Amino acid sequence: KANLKPFRFVFSSDALLKTVVYFGIIFLVIMFFNTVSVSRLKIINLLGASRQNEKFRVSRTGFAAAAFIISVACLATAYTFIIQSNFDFTDKRFLGSIILGSIGTLLFFMSLSGFALKIAQSHKKFYLKNLNMFVIRQINSKVNTNFVSMSVICIMLLITIGTLSTGIGVSNALSSNLESSAPYDISLQKDATQGGGDIVGGIQKGKNGIMNFAGDYAQNSRYDTDITYGQLIPGFMQYGDSFLNSTVPAMSVSDYNSTAALLGRQKISLGENEFTLVCNIDSIIPSFEDFCKSGGTVSFAGKKLTAYACTSESSMKLSLSNSGSSTNAGVLVVPDSLLKGLKPVYVVLNINYGHGVTDEEFTSMLSSAYPDDTEKPYDISYSKEEVRDDAATSTVFSSYVALYIGLVFLIAGAAVLALQQLSEAADNT
Image (tube, rainbow, N blue to C red; front, side):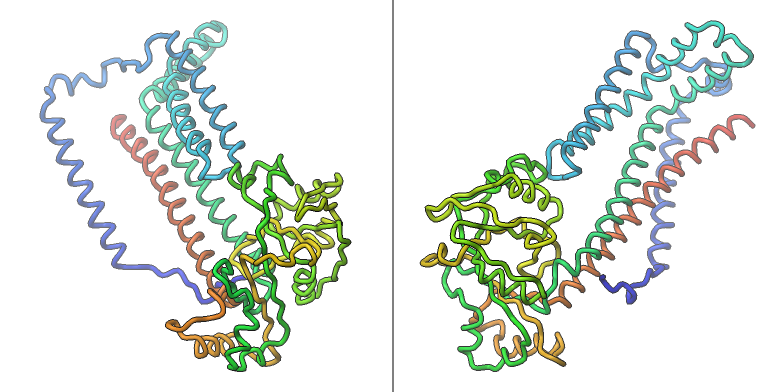
């Protein structure tokens, strides 16, 4: 897990002072405009304000009933959209659910004051019993006066709950997936579309002795195919059509076995007409398992291949390189003979350091051998320590944003309610 012990919450006196000053400016501006508004009123109107009846925002029962039905429809549609989008903020349905939810909440409280009172009045025995008539009219008056603020408070509480739960969920996900997403001491990665598909050979050619400090290492290459994810798992809609239309890369079984051996996993043996799949995203693995269990087949290099074994307990779940999160959406593992003559598009060299070699020592040797202004046999390096540092930073950031935004909206909602109660208390003195 990410080490968060060095991080501390710090109280900023400067921020407190600025907050007091800015709120003071806001109150002064509000006082100025309130003074202007009150100065336009007549004294006789102010003296008789307490005896004037409140005007209903929604006077017609039919309009109130229609607004209530529309609000329920908007809220039901909003919940349907949010479930269908799987809380993916890039999905248009997610934004639609927020808009419809806000409109539905406002219409619900706006229609409630006129609609609920008419329903209560239609039941004479209940309405005229004891103090029900007075209580119902008081509640109706409260809703009629404060339906806008009630809607705003509900939306702020929604944002509070959503932000806090999302921040906590992101923090837990980053910490829990750290070991599975970065199982190697360091990964050297290269885009091989422009050539240079052998990272180990490139380092050894430099005669810098770096590989002498590597304990165990394994290189895996990935190749383009014309097979799409939609052909394998057409019913998987969590990531949308763009994911289903993207192609599945392939790798050789020998590269798989060398990578699996680096993690202490068992090797597999494929027949000439067999394939398997590797993936490290938990939400996709069950769909791949169903595909394989149903006797799934693919056509590759002019051959029809049948699934060998695709279960998370055996060969399915495997990270092919270090990453800040689980990014292996699925790779075909095929016999080596089917990839002969093909050029790789992406190459990764995974290394576990030799005995006594630290991450700082190894990365320093890489930096010394390959300064920024020189050509390297790899494009980027990503060590386990870097992943942990990035995860710690992301965890702290997401936690801070969740707490900050969540508490701000929570306090703002409480402040609105408190101001309403204070104003009513002042009116009743």
